[in-house]
Image 1 (tube, rainbow, N blue to C red):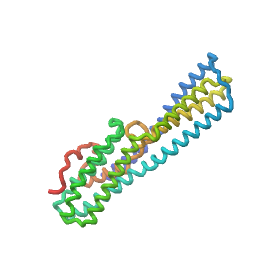
Image 2: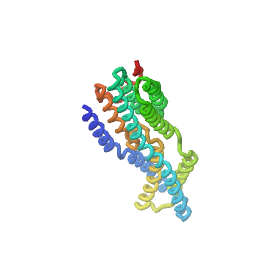
Image 3: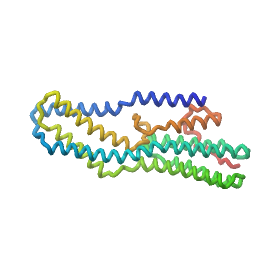
Image 4: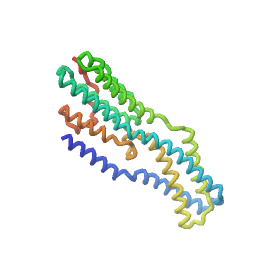
Length: 292
């Protein structure tokens, strides 16, 4: 069953990627077509009044440089975001592995309740980043992670070596730090003033090209479409990259959670549950203390 659900996740991810890969392209293409219609109307009614000169080309080049600078800065956060799911999975698996070994020698320890907390952490993280929660409802995840603290505090008294308790607390801190980083990335806009600058530059350049005198030939239409497409696409791309964990908005540019999906399926299987339950969200609210 576990192998089936893992392959199911992989298949769905590939299938969604195929269907949605060009979603942003078509969205921008519609906007470019509308701008092209506006350009045709401006040319038809003789409203073009700007002459092509070096100042215009210099302005376009400067705008490209500024947008490139902004995207390079955002890309650093995006690359960091791609590593976070792996850090969370490694830490959860480390906690689960240590607790499983401890439960073998201590039958009184409720391992299943701990696993419910771990599953609930993944589930609440997924739901908190969903479109319905504005992609940044992270406090419930932090509360779920905090449920492990009193459990770890009792383990030494139950016979676990102090160094293993320290390791468990360290792994818990890694998860908490990763979740807080997700929270920060999803809520903070990188230098808002730079965004205003880029947006106004793009608007100004599109308007200037819109009222630029052209011959009305196919070459002019192609160049107008190319310039409009490049700048409008860049604006949309910056918005997507600034929230790399935005789930449920119909894009494939968000950071994949397939590692956490696989881990959740694995944990549910180890508990004798159906891995296909996925994000049912029912396991986290009724976790009892693993220490009787």
